[in-house]
Image (cartoon, rainbow, N blue to C red):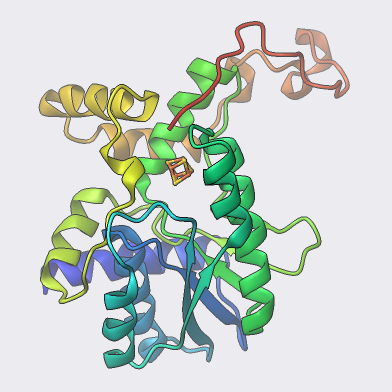
Length: 265
Ligand code: SF4
């Protein structure tokens, strides 16, 4: 019960702070088969009952040929929960897998994004909820800073290019420790993605670094999240945010990354 309270408090905080869900929204939750997105769905179902506004909830899963087992049992689970679910086999992703089996995350996520919008449109949703957690935000911040030369993590709320969807990440303040514990209490099947088994990736390395540091500094991720919302631009080097008498310059296109590294998650 305490776990559920913590989860709902953190999801509620994010929804309120970033104005994620509004009256009359149709929120479609992207289910990846993992613990995070199913925790997100359950949290939104609980909050839907308590919210002072009315919104609709549904779910979808994009099949890109990477699940290690059939995702169909998920459909059974969702039926028992009374959740409308769209299972979408994305033919272009399957072709990509055939033609370029070793393609990277950039290409894979581009294909997924297109499929997500296609399903979202078909379902009549105007909001897509994604299950990225606090851990994903922290890893993304470090990955961008260390490998792409940008201070950026993930947007808590953003819009699709055509602005037909608001994309929200209500688990921004929820750690994977919480989603793991919460999902373990559910009867939902967890269907792993083949990529989750990969070793030697940047993502895995960052996870190991966090794990080591957190053994001595348990609030590391809380601090990183707090830092993302507490910029001191005068102590950074982006001249767009400095006063004119301290080197401030009008906005210019960002400089190319001098150390480009091909990213793998
Ligand atoms: S880890 Fe990368 S390649 Fe694998 S499913 Fe995710 S985005 Fe696609």
